[in-house]
Image 1 (cartoon, one colour):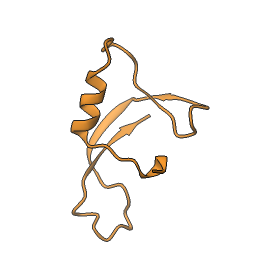
Image 2 (cartoon, helix red, strand yellow; image 1 turned 180 degrees about the vertical axis):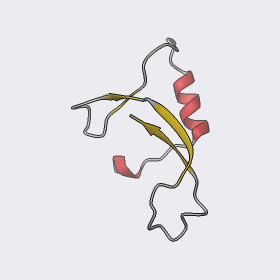
Image 3 (cartoon, helix red, strand yellow; image 1 turned 60 degrees about the horizontal axis):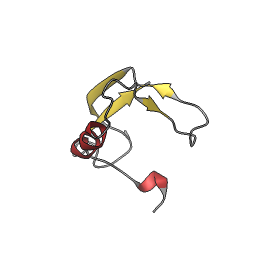
Length: 66
């Protein structure tokens, strides 16, 4: 499975994050295989990922902003 094809629900992500012993860790994001990292600044809901998606009104996402 390609990395880009992996998706997680909020429930799955929450469960994975709760598995960390230290719950005070800073959440970091990378999109270049760990070359650079950015911290999460904001979480928003009701975000539509692709404005050109014909099903955009059926799909609602939450977004991590950095």
